[in-house]
Image (cartoon, rainbow, N blue to C red; front, side):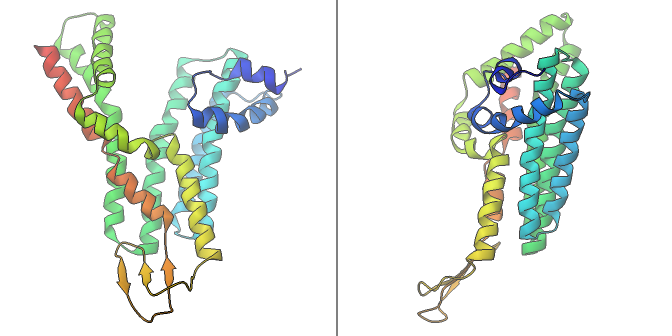
Length: 283
């Protein structure tokens, strides 16, 4: 017999989750975990399902339709919840493995870049501006650059020194610790402005912005409150048709997407920091 939800939380969930996981995602995932523990489903199968749901979510963003965008945001949230379930099942059954961790890690490297590419297509279908494509692919590149930089440090140290791999791993860990433990001015500034736009928060932010956009467009398309006609899109136009008319065409997802692009040079900053740490290491 499967334990109660309270007991399952103690067995299956980590105590060091961030607030988003602890107070939101994990509150839902544990109920799915309890249901699946009664079946023969494996954590690796759940990881694959999470990736599949994330890819389907991305496809919904492509159409540039407000209904589809909202569905895509909800599916993306579901993918994130299911991504927590595989680990909970593995902890309960004590079946965690290196292969399982590999599959679970693929989620971030497949779903998140795919989502941004799909949002780029969807916003292009709404605004017909090539700038959105450029911004979307830059976000994807930045995310990969940031992920590749630590691996390059390890690879460089391995090929350039005769130290055993354990020693190299220790040296790479110290370099990483110096970067994140004693951040430079550029990283300190970056950390202050990027918080609402980074994973895992961006999943919740995409849901909120898609919901706001859907509500405004479908239920509050026009406001008769003043003198300006304001169209928020790739170009902002303001003029005075007459003193009593005011209309507003606003896309929250577009605004969030632009802000995300501005505040997501993670890869470039990470490469810069590792480069200087490697120079210090060489000395």
